[in-house]
Amino acid sequence: MSTTLPHTVMEQLFLNARTHSHWQNRPVADETLRQLFDLLKQCPTSANCSPARFVFVKSAEAKAKLKPCLMEGNVEKTLAAPVCVIVAQDMRFHEHLPKLFPHADAKSWFEGNDAAIAATAARNSSLQGAYLILAARALGLDCGPMSGFDNAALDQAFFPDGRFKSNFLINLGYGEADKLYPRSPRFDFEEACRIL
Image (cartoon, rainbow, N blue to C red; front, side, top):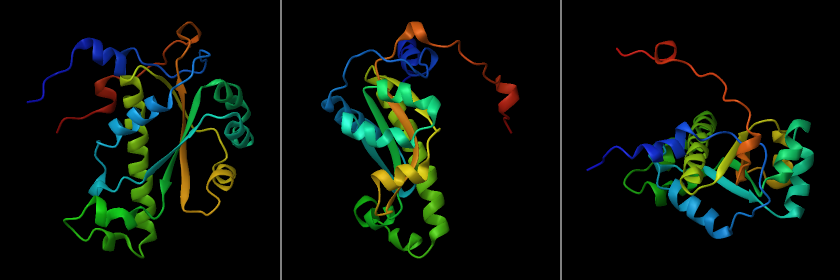
């Protein structure tokens, strides 16, 4: 039976978690990235389609390839982060549905339907990127999710065959809490929600 998690967990995942732009000079182990994926892959996507693909940019060579794709304001913090995750979407994700959703012919739902492929890939890769953020926080990492890059240039640099399309980026590492900006305002329940 599910129970409410302790408040300290809520603080780590949501209440005290922040978007970081400044990073400690402390590496993130490859094993931690594997743990991260093992957590996020358990979270739901429609028809278990799992279209997200993740490129963990760590090496100096890979960061040099990423740098020209970034908007100027995102260069310094991205190069300083131990890892920058490219959250991409597989535009042929439906080819894997016989494995991932074997109890129905879900592949046929998408074949020849580019609009459904694009919408499903975008929606569910965004979900999986959000799951990555929560999994990273659960493992003690800080995150800096962002847009602010040239999708076409990044796709040409990292996915030249066109199968994958970039969605957004997430810097990962151990943030410098003393350099955080004040938290921006949030909506009250009544401003954003309705109970019908």
